[in-house]
Each structure stands twice: as structure tokens, then as C-alpha cells.
Amino acid sequence: MTTATATATSTHLTASSGRLFSKGPDVKYGDFRDDLLKNGYVVIKGAVPRERALKYANDIYDWLEGFNLGFKRDDPSTIHKDHLPEINEKGMCLGYAISHESFTWAVRQEEGVVKAFEKVYDTEDIIVSFDSVNIGFPSRKDIQPNVPWPHQDQDPEKPGFRCLQGLVNLLPNGPNDGGLIVCKGAHLLSEELHKAFKGEERIWSWTKEWYGLTDANREWLKERGCEWIKVEAQPGDLILWDSRTPHYNLSSETSQPRFCVYTCYMPVADATKEQLQVKKKAFEETKMTTHWPNAMHVVDLPVFRNGEPDPYQRSKPRSEVQLSDRGFKLTGIPYLESMA
Ligand SMILES: [Fe+2]
Image 1 (cartoon, rainbow, N blue to C red):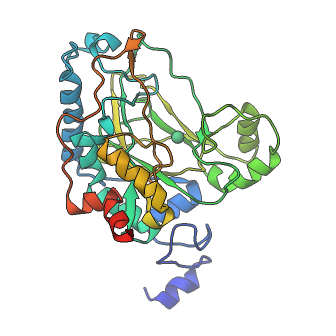
Image 2 (image 1 turned 45 degrees about the vertical axis):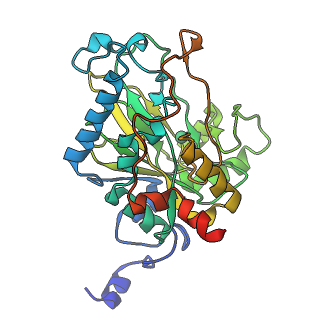
Image 3 (image 1 turned 90 degrees about the vertical axis):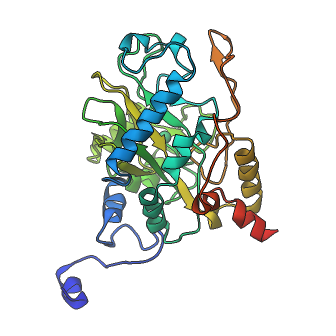
């Protein structure tokens, strides 16, 4: 098909370059970006080869068993906080330098994952967050229930496309296996939603970059035809979503655990020198940064076990972080050095 024919048969402009949304939501790229523009989320099948994704899941099991607290992957009766590192009801593991474990960095450096973000931002000069890993086990009665907390990870005062979030799914994740649920298409209504509810009381948050949706917000979106979709994925699939797309996660209702690594990248040009300095320090101290790749937040929370500081908490991963040249660029450190 010639370009002329393609143009003649389409009511949309075609685009091949520029950051996502830089030409508005009505252009066509002819790839996964079209779904991101329209729906606010997309699943990229096989961004990581399935076998490798399952190996990473296996590495997580090794890591869990390696605490020697009695957890055994083949014995569901050992899925208990007494036998596991601290994992909250949403499946988030926030301690133990998990953000810098071998499997976490291996996933972040996966070519299919990095390339997807390069395409979204139309540049190879991107940096990656040092975010968490989700280890969601089914039927946990030993921790509090996971109640839905629909939210946007973006300050309503700063509208427009700013951040693309991602996760690499490592185990089969069907309709009832827990995981991400998104409000399809609501990213395009975000600005209008916040205008309509301006001045109304907000759900408390420790950061302005998190907006919890109220029942009234959800009703407003429903009236405009937005549906909540449970995203399904296979091992190695990369799920991407616009930070404006309301989302939360569900716990598994089957016997299938849900493991995933959060992967979020942004252009290095979007980070200030000061932010890159904070990021460098977080890397050197193997700290977590939330999903923001510009190290907007550095997480350094105490980890508790039965109300006491967890004696199994550690500030370093099991082995020193090993990175490829590409991986090291993703830390932002080489860019900082060139600014000196
Ligand atoms: Fe979120």
C-alpha cells in the first residue's frame, strides 16, 4: 500500500515520530501506541520471552525461600507472613533492596521492554525507575484484605501526558488471577474530570502525584461510558498504562500467584540535574524510587515483623548489581557525568 492510498483510506493523520500524544490522541502509528492513545493502556505480548519470564519468577521463588523462614514454593500452607518477607496486601514488597535484586534489574534491562519505552518517547535517552516487585499470593488470610483503591498516579494540577507506567508479568494471569484493573479510555477525560470536581475534598495522599478516585468520580466516568477492565497477561507480557488512566490491583481468587516487576522509563531530558543526583545516590545506596524514573521520591521506609523492626530487612541485594552498558545508561549516571 502506498502512503497516498493509506492517507486516502484513513480519516486519521499518520505519525511516525515524536513523543506519545505530541501530535494529539487522533493520530495513527500502526502499532501498540494506537491502543495507548485510545484506551490508556496496552498489553505488549512477549516483550520478554516466556521461558525467561518464568525463569525470573523462579528466581523470585528462590529469593523468597532464601530467607530461610520456612516458605516452600510447593507447599501453600507456608504462604504466611511468618514464613515470608514483608509483602503488603496489595502484593507490594517494599524492603530488602528488592528494587536492585538480580531478577529486578534483569527485567529492567530486557530489550523488548526498553525498546517499547524508546518508541513511546521517540528517544533512546531514557532512564528507568528503581521500583518495586509485586508478589501476590492467593487466599491470604494472614494479612488484611486488599480493598480496591482506584487512583491516578499523576497530579490533577499537572494535566497532559507525563508518565507511562509499566509492569512485566511473570506468571499466567487470567481473569480471576488478580492483577491490574484499568478504567479504559478515562485518561482522555482526566482533565475534564478534575475541572468538574475542582475544589472538592480529596482522598488523603502523601504525595500530590497520587489522586484517589471518589465514588462520585467513578460515577462521573461511568456516565461517560468508561468501563473497568481486568487486564490479562501471559508470562513475559508487558502491560503499559498512562499515569492518568485510573487503576488498581486485585488479589487472585484462584490458586495462581501473581508475580510482576514494575518497569517505568522516561526521557532523561525530563529529569533535572538535581533529580539525577538524587537518583545516583539512590542507585549507590540500592534504594527504591517508586515508579517515577526521575527519582521524584526515594522510598526508605522501615520494615516491620510482628510490630518490631524486621531482623531480616537488608539494605543491599544478595549480590552486587551487575549492569550491561545499556543498563548503566538507564540509571542516568552517565548523563550526569557528561553534565559535570
Ligand atoms: Fe498506581
